[in-house]
Length: 288
Length: 288
Image (cartoon, rainbow over all chains, first blue to last red; front, side, top):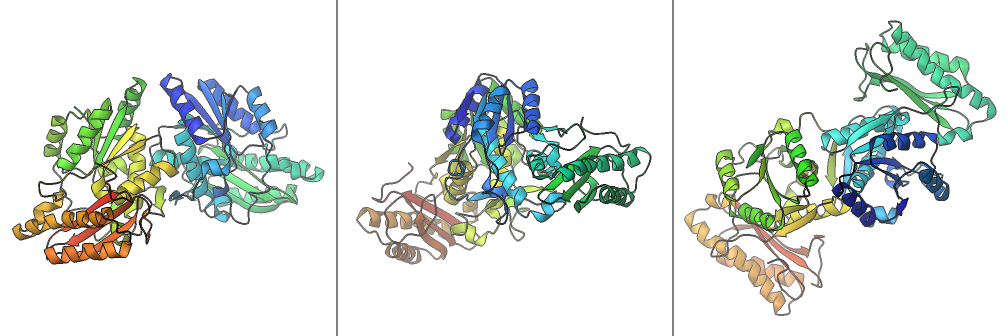
C-alpha cells in the first residue's frame, strides 16, 4: 500500500493510473476509521481498479467553537485498517500540504445548507466543498464514495458534482448499523450504558415514521410529531431536530409525493447522535 | 472539426481523447474571434495533440449594468476561423446548457480582484472562476491558454489552478499588437480615426515606463506619474487607472524588487482601452 503525503505525489500517482486505463475509486475521510468507512472501502473495491483513501481533518469545515483540535486522530491504526481492506494508496497530507498559503478562491454553497445540521454550522459546507474540490483534483476519481449517515453532505456533494460538472460519479453508501439498529459512529463511545440502550430507539423512531408512510400517511407534520413523540417516550435524549424534506434538494414539503429524507439529531449527555432514512413516496427505502 | 453544444457531448469527447493518450489544449473565449484568439489557438496547436475552443458569453461575469446582451456575437464567422486554425473541437453551449438550474455552488475569489479592472467590476472574477471551473471539468485540458492582454484574469486563473489543485497548466500568451503597438481588441473598431492615431501612445506610455526601470528607476510613484503624464500629453483619452503592482499577486509595492505589471485603462469616446506590460526588476519583459 502506498502512502502519499504531498499533493504533487498523489496527483502524479493518480494521473499515471488513469493513463494506464485504471478506474479510481475515492473514499474521503477524516480518519479514525470505523466499520462505516470500511463499508465505503469495500464498495469502492468492488467497482474500481484502484482504491484511494484520504485521511485529512479539514480545518476549513470546523467553526471557531467546534472541535478541530480535539477531533480524534490515530494514523497508525488507520493505516493498518486501510492495508487490511486492500486500499491501494492513502493520501494523508498535513494542513500545510493542503493549504500552503491562504486561499484566494473558495467555494460558496448557497443551497441545501440552511436545514438539518447545516443550520447550526455556518460555513461548514463551504469548507467541505472546498476541500473536496481540491481532493477531486488531486485524486481524479471516476467514483467517489460517501456514507449516507451524513445525508446532507451527500446532498451537497451531489450539487457540487452536478453544478460544476465534475467528471465524478457519486456513490452514496447506506449507513452501517449495530445489531440493534444504532448507526455506527465514532461518537457512540461517549454514550453511558443506559444511553447506549436507549440509542437504539432513534433508528426505531425513524422506522416508525417510515412505516406510517408505508401505511398511507402523507402529512409531513403528522409524521414529524409521531417521531418526536416516539423519541421522547423511549429516551431521555433532548431532540435537536426531527425533519422531513425532499431528497436530495432538502426542500420542505407538506404532502409526501417524491423521495424524502426523515432525519433526526438528538443530544445525549456527552454525544449528539444523528441518523436518517431516505425513502420513496410509498415508504420503500431508496438505498439498501 | 467537431462542434459540440451540450456538456455531456464535450465531456465524453474529452474523456475519450484522454483515454487515447492525447494531450488536450484548451482556449476559452467569448467568441467574436480576432488575431489575439488566433495566436492562442496557434500556441495550443504547437503544444497539444487536440485543441478545443470554447465560445460562451458567460452571463455570470457580467454585472447588471454591463453589456451582456449587447456583447458582439458571430457564430458563423467564429466557426470559420476555428476551422481555418485547425481547431479539433468547438464547444459552443447555450446559457441553458451551462446553467440548467440556478447554481447551488459558486466560486468566491477574495484576492487579486480589488485592483485594476476588478475594482469596478464586483463579482466579475467570481463569475470567471465559476465558468472556468465548469469548463475545465468538461474539457479536461492538460494546458489552458490565456491572453496576457487581460493580465488580471491570468492572475486569477493562476490562483484558481494553484489553490484548488486543478491538474491544468496555465499558458499565458503575449498580447498581439498592431504594427504601431496598439493591442488588438474587438473594441478598437469603436475608435474614431483621430483616436486610433492616439491609441498607439498607450503602448508607448507603457514602454516609456518600462524604459525608466531599465535605466534604474525603482520608485513606483515616479513611474506611475511619468506614464500618466505621457498619456495626457499624447492623447485626449481620460485615464481610468495607471497602476504598478507585483505580478501575479497584484500587491502594491513601493520599490521594484520583483516581477511587476504596469497596467493602464483609458477612456476614449466610445471605447475603454486596456493594456499592460509585465517585466522583471531589471525591466526585461517576462513574456515574449
